Each structure stands twice: as C-alpha cells, then as structure tokens.
Image (tube, rainbow, N blue to C red):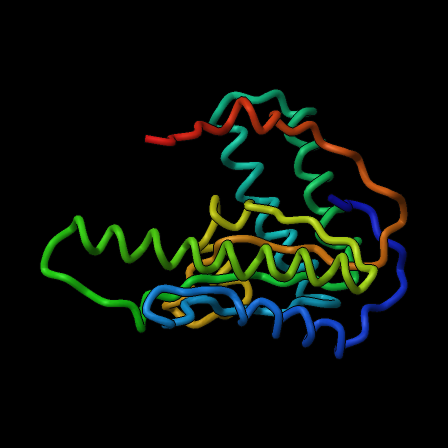
Length: 189
C-alpha cells in the first residue's frame, strides 16, 4: 500500500487502462453496479476538505482531543491531495433486481457492494502492473452525502471508496497479514 507519491503526473491513458480493468470484474446478473469519478487538481482538494470537515465533526462528537483531531484531518487531507489522481468508486442499485422482501433486497445490495470491491481490486492490481502506487481509502463510506454534494454526483451514486494513485515516492509500509492457517478451515467431508 502506497501513501506517498511523487508529483509526476499519471497519464490519462493509464487511468483509462485502470478503469477498463475495473469494468472486467465480475458482477451480479452482469449489472455492473460500479460508477467512477476521476479526481485531479482542485476536485481532490474540495473532496479532501469536505471529508475532513465531516471527520472533524465525527471525532469531536466522539470526544477525541482537538490536537488528535487536527492530526487525523491533516493526515487524511495530505493523503488525498498529494496523490496526482484519485478514483472515487461508487455503487448504484439502479439496475439491480428489486424484490418485495427485505432479505433479498439486502442480498442484492451486498452483491453490488462485492462487485464494486472486485472492481477496486482490479484497479489495484492493474496499477501495480503499470508501476503505479495506490491506496484504498474507505473514508467516503463515513460521509457519503458530503461526497455526493461536493462533487455534484448523480443521486443514485453511493460512494464506497477512494483510490489514491500516483508514482510511488517510496516502497510503502508492509502490513502484517494473518497466516493462512488462522483464517482457513478445510472441509473434506
């Protein structure tokens, strides 16, 4: 996971390649519930500022110390605005099936969310293949209305994640992973 980037611009053709990889992800009923907004320049700053204000409000409500709030908001703002490009991934249920019961509608929502996550994973893999760094940020889930309003997105777009992209400034920080043995059971009978 890369969180620091050089200021070298990411060519538009590379971003298109990433989005094409995203749209090859599996999706329920082949409905392709993903939508993407590519952010560069002032759009990143507007989004980072709006999301930072919401983060500040949430943390203050939680009773977090003001200096810790300022640090978290600053770190988030820096991560978003220092990336040459960001891809906001949204989900739409517009083309998904609708049922007369909550159980199946909930399953449709989960399936759509899984499809968006698969599309995001394809972006991350393709970015690595192209020599780009990327970081998946889930922050838009905490402030979807602010994201939609700030960017003027269509009303049926539900923000899910923000991928920051750029040429890596460093190798990133390795993250520990649970051993396979701890997260897997084998059922042979």
